[in-house]
Amino acid sequence: QVHLVESGGGLVKPGGSLRLSCEASGFSFSDNYMTWFRQAPGKGLEWVSYISGSGSYTNYADSVKGRFTISRDNAENSLSLQMDSLRAEDTATYYCARRPRTSVIDWYFDLWGRGTLVTVSS
Amino acid sequence: EIVMTQSPGTLSVSPGERATLSCRASQGITSNLAWYQQKPGQAPSLLIYGASTRATGIPARFSGSGSGTEFTLTISSLQSEDFAVYYCQQYNKWPLTFGGGTKLEIK
Image (cartoon, rainbow over the protein chains, first blue to last red):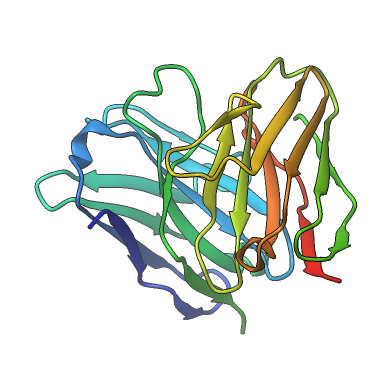
């Protein structure tokens, strides 16, 4: 079955770090760009970061640039998001999502995980 | 950044009736728009991309239209499983941005 499962969320103090993981199954993981999104409580969706299938290309939202690092392990079908210097405004549910492999120039997402909640609070 | 504005914020419709959801972009995005459905506690799921192309497995009662700055998602005959929050997303320009969502509730 094709799905994505996030883990690693939790409560962390401001300035702390957390590493999120996203385990993929049921598809050829290395064929797809993967992306992290987040959704603050009661708010809309926000793009956070993406990584190419090979891991060679990455990009970040300005709000997390220099603090978050996206990576992937294609042998383990795993995507990660290392989050450092966390702030209260990073509190959100974090989702990983797949960009279709057939999508050459378009950036929509056909498979999402259920998310993992990150709470940054003292 | 392109701002996406969805209206209304909440839409109350009876099962079997038609629902029309709107999404407006702050600048032209051609047809680079997707629609997602999200139910409580669940992941978002792709409904429409390219403004009007249904994703795999999406029923024909869902249709998308529009280009430029004005877009519409229409659900022709609401089923009980369609009551959810709907988001539009533009992918014409980075950063990718989403609308604030329309909550479709049972009247």
